[in-house]
Image (cartoon, rainbow, N blue to C red; front, side, top):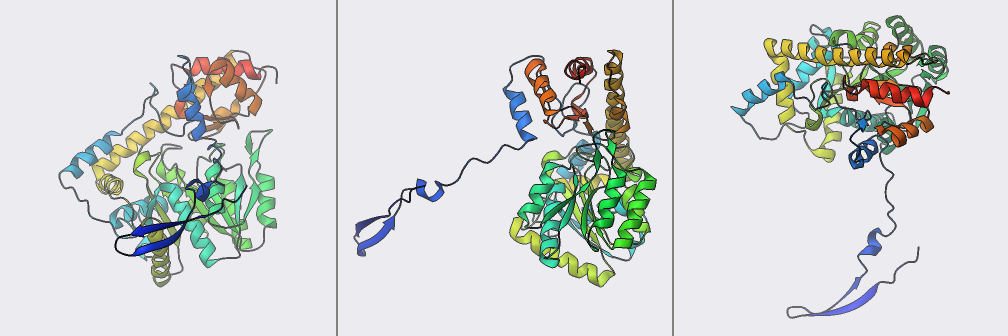
Length: 427
């Protein structure tokens, strides 16, 4: 690109006389900036919105929808907002966020009666949902373990790679998904854990693995935890779907509890986007288990220092919603009922989609639809088959074949099944 020549101009000021200065064309400052590639997930919604077809279906969005395909605000959230409205507080939160929200959030991940909480061994701060929690941890890893790498499963949520890349943490990958069985590649996963250098950092999905919906069994989690102990690896859990996966927050935290029982000092990212529908509020938590209270105090101070130049302190409204719900027994019970209702609808749509495809006489196995769990189904369709779905049937999803089950409804499941059968029957 040609370098523009700066132009010297002379301006006469009544107060200071003649001043020489260099000016350049405004465009020369950012002339080398090229358009960023579209986000593979967000781009799906853009294409869907631009499609005028009345038959279009969006199964790419990672947000819950009811059986009419509409966004949902939970009743527990509406009641919490009503209570908050009577006592509005717009003051800054501390750098670490709402202590009450963090306290209730830790109970969800580590257990209501956790000794770690009682002994104040957990360093935790409010974060900008799960993405912000992951990013602060990635920066913490870079600052305090500067030569370390992060092992990330194949596949994973695409933004995980962006987060650790921008924190300048080198990335490695480990086997996770088995394309032929459309399940967990447990043997190769364990090989990668064993062959990684001692003391490596691993990113693990606590439940409802995104994008595959494939989770290890309880026994497999125990084997993974044991091998992590042997190798001295550090486990960082991203838990974006607690409660939303099975309908039971305790069950969905089982992987974390297994690691804690084995004495691991883990890290954890939590989010309320999916399980409370607080997508736009960006409420999350980052926590690290420490050796003792003194270490936890030091670690929390450093997490706050990382947050300070990023956003100074987190937003208050969503934190108030979460803490209001979780600290009130009646509201918490209502939330548990509603989150189970969301999970049950997703599970029901999995069953319906599988049955509708099988009813059409598909020669393929579709057991994986009901074997997988959580918001997403890793269908096994190829990018070319996905392209056909979009072009011929106006069905939108990411090209890796990931179906957002939240976009499947009793009104479109039959149409979706017929389209999937049509593009896969010759495979």
